[in-house]
Structure formats: C-alpha cells, structure tokens
Amino acid sequence: MPKFNNESDEADWWASREGRDYLKRQSAEAKSKGTKATGSRLVAQIAKKSSIQIAIRLPEGDLKRAREIAIRKGIGYQTLIKMIVHEGLQRESKGI
Image (cartoon, rainbow, N blue to C red; front, side, top):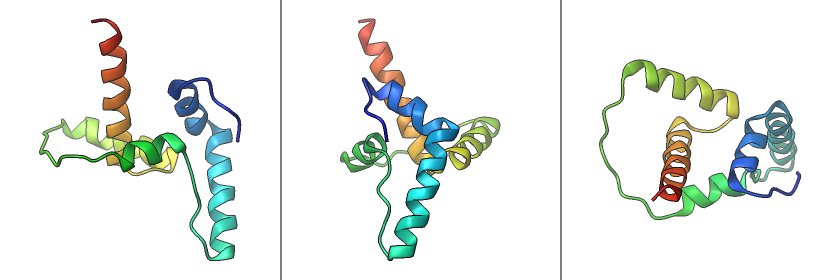
C-alpha cells in the first residue's frame, strides 16, 4: 500500500481498481489465515470516532447510487456516506 499525502489521495486510491484489488487480496489472505483484514486507515478513523445516531431522508436515487458506489469500493454504504459528509465539511470549512 502506498504512502498518501492527504486524505483525498488516500480516498482516491482506495476507490481505484488498484485499491480495490489490494483490499480483495488482503481479505482473501486474512480469511485463509482465519484473521480479519485491515483496510483503509481513513475508513477506520472515521468509523472509530464517536458518533451520534441521526435520521436523515435522502432521495431514493441518491441512496441507490451510494449503495452501488459502496459495493464497488468494498465498504458499507453508511461508511461511504459518512466519508462524503466528512470530506465535504472539510472542503467547506476551508472557505470560511
């Protein structure tokens, strides 16, 4: 796995074919050893942060696309949505 300069570069790599292939290899290797694969530091960091449960209504089409993208990236759709919100908030905060 390469070193990343920032979260955006890391997210792009995990979303790339190379990143997905790496995750598949790691998962298969861990499964054969009876262990759990470690994936993205970014995903782990976002998942580890304490969170507050909320209810949000999304257009059906947006949720469908989020699920499709999440499957392609090999992550859960809720994790994907949290990553997108996190990245958007960081980007918008820079403009303040």
